[in-house]
Image (cartoon, rainbow, N blue to C red; front, side, top):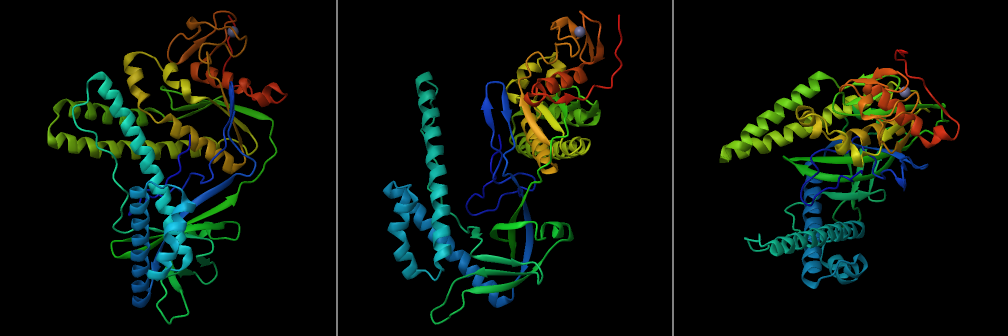
Length: 440
Ligand SMILES: [Zn+2]
């Protein structure tokens, strides 16, 4: 579910992974349940700090980046022409000659080779996919253009990935030390550079946060260091409460407590983008296409912001130690087959992103997360278990045909999810939903 945000060669990632774990979650699948936290889980943050090098230091850094890029490009070229993607093999073939010609310290030569190996591997994977797709098109007789495979990775200027040995950030003095090119006759290959740290990042520069690695980036005449720090997540004893979280088209998230998250405004903005997109798609002109591209980016950012805000609210409404129970998302699109307008309303929403955001923030706060099968969770009565399509009177209303239990449909679904948690069946309680229970 979680995809690591990697830097593509020559440029930095557009958005630092502020909220995502580099080590990720380990999801353990068994038929109906997938558990998302691993016991050694760490939270990671990317801190962007601007370097303030002296002119001499700037020259050194520039030269270092250039030589690093040359190494990267050379290894990529060799790997692609000789069809080698094995890191050790590439090291054996390139290290000695690069050490002799380049002025780079050995750590950086190795780092450039590792980066090149990763790039070449991803290009090989992409080409495989392209070929497969092309062959499929050929079978269907739809292949019109000749096959164009991904090119050898080459970069005008690579970001340098420093590891814990090749960089150091001094918390007290606010200085960064980086290895750089070594000129003949010089003994030092480390520069100690002043940095500017935005106040917001101070919280991540404490002893609690361990410095993992750093990317050196040059952009618009400035050097930036994207520092990756990590911190062990606190282990909280389960509080004994399971809270179901139902994701859906009516409200983005509803908990069994019950609390409602993501209302009209999100839906309206989303629909406005949707309508705009549809009208642009109909046009097909060059300018419409340009607008569409812009719109896609804007929509994605809007959804990401909304998901972050919403997951933050949701998680902070729970206690550390609570168990959040969410549905296994593979079947959400099946479940949201509502009326046409409703289906459109949120079908383009990135629920997977919302869910991983909730899971991540929950884990960070010491809450546990469980995923369960959501089958019939919207049709089943959370009091007597009776399953019937007619139980769901409307989009928002649930009324059991067997026992007469009435509730908000999403709250009922959230409650069903909570009771399906494995930890609940092994003895933990579920907080009763505070909805009116009417007997008929
Ligand atoms: Zn019932």
